[in-house]
Image (cartoon, rainbow, N blue to C red):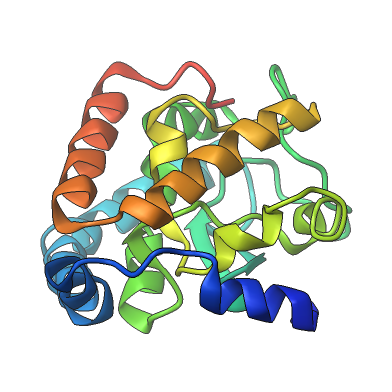
Length: 222
């Protein structure tokens, strides 16, 4: 768990304006109902056959497990185990390093999975467990968060809500490598905007934009 100081706890309570009643109802209960219902549909109708097929292709391309399970930061700084399809060569002793353009660790099938966002599909299981939401700021690896947690203004505020499989920052191009502080600042700005404005309509729009991105292929996914 990442430490949260008293100043941040105060900001957490008072920094945002009080939402309208219909937005509050969605944020407190409706969003979780939406998450469970949609995730169950995806798990039963899609993951039940997608995991075996993609799993076979992953194992065919390189030895190692089908799923990649990584510690990531979640709601209020609590870490959880995030599930995704393995897209890189298996190296259990390797230290954390963010994927970069042309990264030779990414396998052939992994490159396709990343480009289409299919590598994130197992995270619907994280949603069912309750660690994630379908829409929200993307969870970063714990090691990645440690670089920014105490050094970048407003960084912690992106964890005021559950992290998402997809998010406003991702569908607006702020995904992939963050080699410069400005890239992370843009991501934080969009994450905070989503947190302030989140509603069922905005979530549905982001879901649709995500599907469009999957069909076109994301140019920032390496």
